[in-house]
Length: 375
Image (cartoon, rainbow, N blue to C red):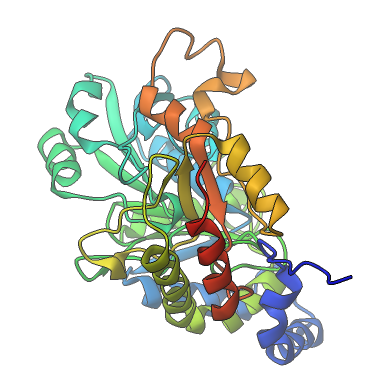
């Protein structure tokens, strides 16, 4: 009996295998240092991340959600925002984007998505602005840059802060500028499945605002600006030096990682045409902007596509089946509000394998199988 070929969605052990010798060295370096909170590994990673993103400052923190929380809390401590102020956020995002706003005592104001980019529809931004609006949180979802002239114009004309949720788009560019440097501040996640992933939770904040960076750093360390001197009611959200050491191994490979994901995306896009049953992603005018954290297709009948992929041994995932406004924790807050494009995306989206664990041959085989899908 011939065993069917399997095409896994992601194998983290395989993804980390090319770095194994360096990771062992990094781990041994941390253990030998005797410094297990803060220290040189965290400081060096912050400098390297700031340099990689073209920002003046980077602050390592515990995870991507905390990075967003700390940015918003810092703006409150700085007097830029106060409880009840509004932050515009895309309706089509992972719930963490919205949780951070709520946690800070601010009000999330959702804006629907663009069906072509799957990101925030910037043509709807102006109608979402009220006298209480203080910021736009733009989310570079799936690795595609969510930034354009309209977003810049709205923020500039009204005087809004722009916060990038850059959890999925490290290495992406907009007109030559790196995500993480486009807005006033940006949050990064280095969850293990990310394009640059830690071996556990990790995150960072980047900014060129010295005061914001200092406030975020203090808040992340119990609110202290120096030992046993607490100027804020802060948190314990520090980056672990072991994770910092791991990320220092991987960060220099970000362009290589992005290039490989674009190569795999090109194979899918070349060999699978959009049909009424299956819509392939549209590339930006400059494909170098997109780093394909996920390769997301839209299926008119997702259940049918799932069965087809299972029958052919193709791994997949769904990002995300339930948008924030339909989560139980937000059911009352967003009751009666309509985000029709986001609902369509949530009901149809499906992510295909697109990591270094997917070989060129496997991507070509997956594309050939998908090309025969009729819905």
